[in-house]
Image (cartoon, rainbow, N blue to C red):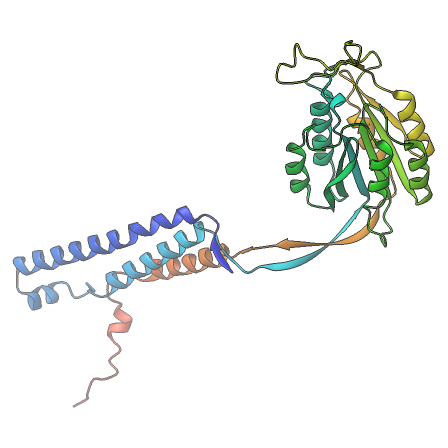
Length: 344
């Protein structure tokens, strides 16, 4: 494979034919002036050191050097190769709650948006760890399988909304079970599940799921989004007026369930970390993750193109040096060498 990384620089090639035409016109104009001034053979005798071929060679060398400089600036790149890189890290599965209660605004701009910002910043802090993403509400779905491709993880993260999971509710246990089964079975790396939720579980037994995960050597950290006082859950487009109501017509207040989140983390060797307006919990979470035992693993990464511009610049420099060394006048030393002169 071949490409120019800075293909717009190739527009500079337009200059070359313009310079060639100018040189040709200028050269003809000089010859015409000399011819008008006097007989060409007589003029040659008056200027014995003047060379008619060296200026032409110097110009062509200059044009070739300029050609290679422009090609070098366009950054020619060749090949596509698979590069094997060794990394040292852990495997992290992030389970993000996308139930309707995550639209509550006791954390600005909302619990879900703050959670997405936190995950994005966490990904930016990671370097050699593998990461995966799960979304859950009444059910759990894998959004990004375990990977070292942080760019893809952040791209999928930006598209997440509370409507991405069709079944509403909060099934933290299902999220933990899915995350536990999402790790590569033969991997020896430390495995971590990070649950980001408001803790209002209505579907299953998340503590039991956390215990089962811990039996596999998986640590579970919980990150609480919201406040114990809670906030109403916006509904519809006018989020400032329409709020979810119960059967009696009262506005439902969604509160952070810290007790449940603490039990989940405690039963799986992890830790509960609150995340509110004053404390996002990101630094504390990253400190915990960064201190875990990281092991070496091999990761295959594509290094699609290799830059080759240095060869073009090198050849251009060589041509310019040759052009500089060629004198425009005839060489007296070379003019005395007459290989084909017949001695009488």
